[in-house]
Image (tube, rainbow, N blue to C red; front, side):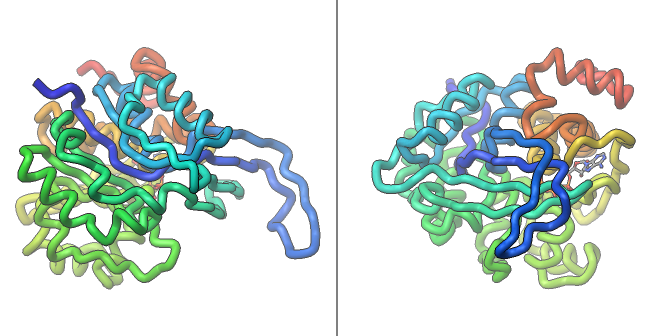
Length: 316
Ligand SMILES: Nc1ncnc2c1ncn2[C@@H]1O[C@H](COP(=O)(O)OP(=O)(O)OP(=O)(O)O)[C@@H](O)[C@H]1O
Ligand SMILES: [Mg+2]
């Protein structure tokens, strides 16, 4: 018997969110933001929290410091019932933090990675992997120590019988150096957004990128913001349009919430097109509140937003 549905291995940080800013900051000057929020950040943590709120059982494996932000990260995860027992606390490194400057639908981020850069592949032991049915990893480019052994981690997970998924997220160095020919065969569901997909495949459109990925990939899900998302599987592509939200608060974490919806249904063995649809629902729900987790308080709350704003019954 597995203890958890999903093991999330990944980066942990807080988001310091500045909203309603008077223009763009300039060196040597000061401007004001008229709203502020301190929340659990990090792609992996938003994914884990929201997946748990949807009803999956989730454990987290990552590295934080012993500072106040570490307390915020851990308590936020626990509030969402994410198991934090595997998280390593470092005396040497500080907990990561991202300053998020929101401008209408877009944003500029600055991240201090801290402890997240120092999680090592061998620290994710077989015993930890064996505790779950599915492994999800996000933000590989922020986890430099883990990244160099990422293929080995996924191979071990597959050998131990787990299903796997990965959201690569943005590469701050913009080198996009991932060994896809080794990595994609051991990832069941690969979840980049359009831009990440194009950089990773060195292509200027989805069709030519898929041509390159098709000999090595299993299922590829490409997130396309307010356009929705595309699923490539068994040689065919299916696209689904997004749920329209005319009152978007912000889009922080929409991709992670999409992933949570998709994987929640995927581990239940639902058809991939249903997973895609549900990803679009949870992505849209994410845009109804500030930050990545505020709209995902619990299943009942999520269900009410889905029903009232997007006419979708999450129990169907
Ligand atoms: N304005 C919007 N209205 C409705 N749905 C949206 C909107 N923006 C995003 N979504 C939903 O969220 C999903 C993920 O969004 P997006 O493509 O921005 O992912 P991402 O770039 O990976 O995001 P993140 O910055 O969180 O990593 C989309 O595929 C879509 O289903
Ligand atoms: Mg993303």
